[in-house]
Image (cartoon, protein in one colour):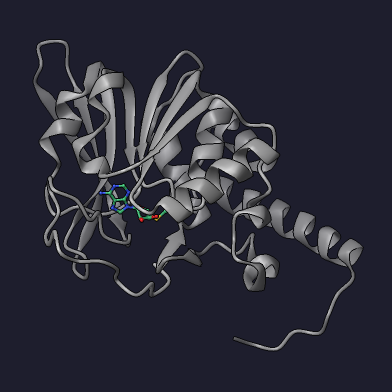
Length: 238
Ligand code: SAH
């Protein structure tokens, strides 16, 4: 870690607000044109979701450690996934991989209700507490294997998976509503991964679209995952 001179809290907050504006400009320049998504990103303090030593880097456009060898996703990827999911205010949405709760916070600003699943209880509880502390309550969370979805709450208008799976877990496609959209990074843990969008048409068929290359921590679960026995990838900043 690099050494940085101590800064006062007012210096820090003005630096963070400048960095946030710069990030929002970068997101726009990178093609995120959806004003609602940009407003949601502007309204959530990313610094509250990153580990303390990384607070100064909160608005850098990169993934940062959150504990348990996991990472908070890069802001551009959060924006891209949210934009590609085309979420609407009446939607019921499922997120797999709560992590820090940052993507969950953005989604909660945009949709009616979010259901979010995390495999680490420690991360889920921390995220839940944090979301409540910033006034976000329109969600339910549980600890478990999200590759199986949340059958009791299905169908979902949108499903967003924030960890990479070699294949698409069948339960997630089953739990999509008609015209529903699933956003998921597909690929091997250390290999090529592509961010995919699957749309369930009214006749039940699935249309797929590739949004581009990405790098995510692995989805560790029974469905779709490469190795059910992987415990952690050691957190290498993806
Ligand atoms: N959305 C998060 C990104 C977290 S990284 C954020 O905004 O911070 C991906 C998360 O997926 C990790 O926390 C990891 O523990 C979790 N994960 C991996 N496999 C999972 C599974 N099968 N079920 C639920 N969560 C899983």
